[in-house]
Image 1: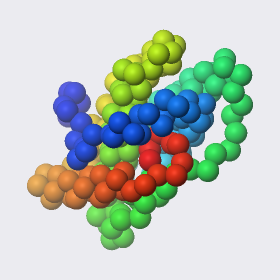
Image 2 (image 1 turned 90 degrees about the vertical axis):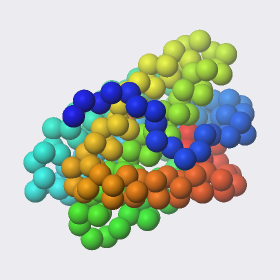
Image 3 (image 1 turned 180 degrees about the vertical axis):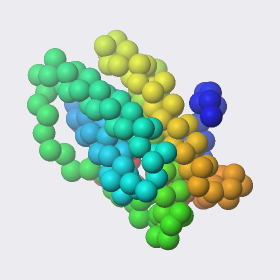
Image 4 (image 1 turned 180 degrees about the horizontal axis):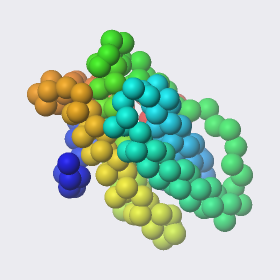
Length: 197
Ligand SMILES: [Fe+2]
Ligand SMILES: [Fe+2]
């Protein structure tokens, strides 16, 4: 499968209100972003342990985990260069709420998990692109420009992996359902400033 840059499959664009909140609290966005990269690596590794009977998943997930850890280190260095400490941060409800609707039987569980990961990557990509376009701070804008392409590729890779475990029509229908759910989650009032709220 070749991962050409197709348009992201997302139901809704981010609201201007999100962008405004994010730009008004960049230290929190950066810290949350670091945690998101760490979490993405951990999710990929968890899948490697859960699906040891799926050897075809090992190399793609391992590569993904490494890339996410590289992103994590990149964001850590930006935090450090700005005198911001890496601290624990309460995660927003977004990812947990998305994972909650994953079906429990296999292979539906695997398909849904991969699609939820695809949606999170796609949303990260969309938001990083917004940040890169609107940040006055050239260093941060540059950071986000560099990450947009990787996150878009991750989005495509997760969709491609999900397609291995079900028929194209069923998988794409499920993706649309999950995206509608995601759009509904984003429409809820948000209390925290996070990359995904
Ligand atoms: Fe990443
Ligand atoms: Fe990613």
